[in-house]
Amino acid sequence: MKTFKLCSLAILFDNEQAEDELHLKGKEIPIVDGLIINKEEAEKNWLLDAVVTKEWKEFFEDYLKDKQKFMAEVTITKRTNDPATLVCKVKSINELKNHYSIHLDGVLVVKKDDLSDMLLRNLIKEGYSGDDLFNEFKRRKKDRGRAIQGILTNAYEQVKKKGFYDSESS
Image (cartoon, rainbow, N blue to C red; front, side, top):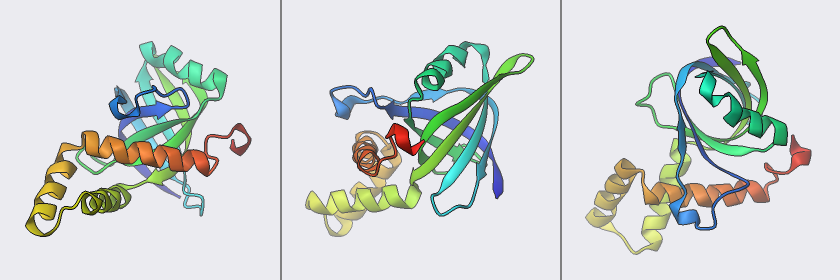
């Protein structure tokens, strides 16, 4: 197992996602502190411990109570690192003196290289080539806006097909 500092956590979307998938917005969770542990298993399982302020307790309690899974984007070690995307579920919520510790189980579904590969594939399908391909790739990668959201929506559909959202796969 390897342990890293959890630098950021954003909830991308869950089972109850909006009808208009192109306009999905992530919810950045301000974390006070956190750890993420790579269990180094073939299933790409990770354990997350996010320390959050008290106002986030109810938000995570809803996920815990409903045993609802969600996609999250995390960065480790430093905020400027490229994020990884996981399908997570809340395992427990523990009260600390001034905060709450949220324990999550996550399965890695998209990493930086996967996003770059998917983005490049999409650009080629759109007809880009040569310098135009290179410049548009750099622009969209930097933007991380709609282009990345479309890729994540596609990844969401893929993980649903693989059963990551089934309650039996808990």
